[in-house]
Image (cartoon, rainbow over all chains, first blue to last red; front, side, top):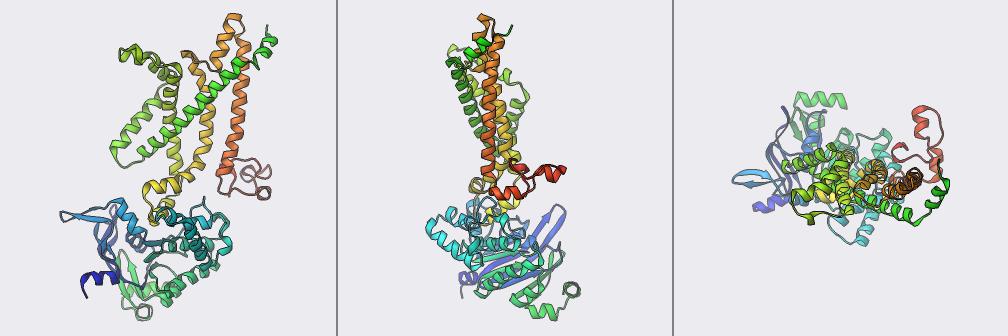
Length: 260
Length: 256
């Protein structure tokens, strides 16, 4: 297998990511590899850096050291004389348009209906024909169970419904990769299930996903690979059975004792 | 003594209708250019490049820091002297357009900047995550939301603008105040005619108030049906404990 093909199979490759906020190091040499079709779940206590790591994969955060590749393509930077410099905005935007990001706080566009939210980027970023996008957007809203809410404004929707619209909005771009940043953490407990159901369905359809979550049941059931982070480093990783039942590291075990 | 006959004679006269029209279109044009200049300045000020932020800061510092009347006179009398060319003497309406637009731009810059910073930063992140570049995200996502915060103070600005154009009377632009003075002085009826002008000013500012309310309601993403409005508690009811439903309240106070 030549290198390019290897890259194509590897959706995300992060090498020695370092991220600092002032004097605080939030990511201290993180290596990560996500293969096509894989569901990687990142767990860990708050402040461990998992959300920051996810935001780096979309270049919503700049990194201080290391490299991130999306399908073998360097993200956010280009190499000039051996040094990384900030890439052109157009390039960053192009890579981002292929990566769906679901936010903890939904971040729907409040001045647009659910349908308009879903249609916005395909029409204005990808310049696809409106009629075609509308058809696809309606199908996506149907898929997340909100066909009847197409013309509702976000403030008229419950948190769970808003998050499902947000997922449909990300899917409308036909992303190769979906990133979920604590997608259910801002929801009332009874609304968590409907969002997890959509995420589970996506995983079953073979979507490549990186999920930061506190839902351990979901992690165990859906993940192909679980990463436990604490204090800016990856402490332990492996298949869910290994992490949840036979964790080797004491920090992993004590964290799981607290949340399970 | 006050001559009501003069007041009634001039109130519906063509002179004042024309003067009111001049006041209106000069104000509207200056406000329009002010908004454009303000938008540019706000974006410059918020830029990460010092070569954009510093000129914007200097501009705002100058135009907010010196009187409008002085700016008008500088452009009217000062400019032809500086460049030693009588041809540089601009017509009065051009001087007013330039001076008022530039002055208004400085104020609008601060209003637009405040409006933009009032939008949740998560909105920009969401736009970026969908592959939008900065200009598209601004145009489609951020500015439409900022408009909600910008319209109420913008309405205030235009209300001020309608009245501040009276400053243009000192350089002889035939707007309302100038017209009142010109027709009033020879007949010693300035007071009567200033009252006529006041009626026109009040008429325009009142009408503008209604237009502004309508725009604010149009921009409200929580815009609700009439029935919703009756069900919703008004801002006064929630904040002060009296008063009823949210009828007729503006955008910012209608609660969620």
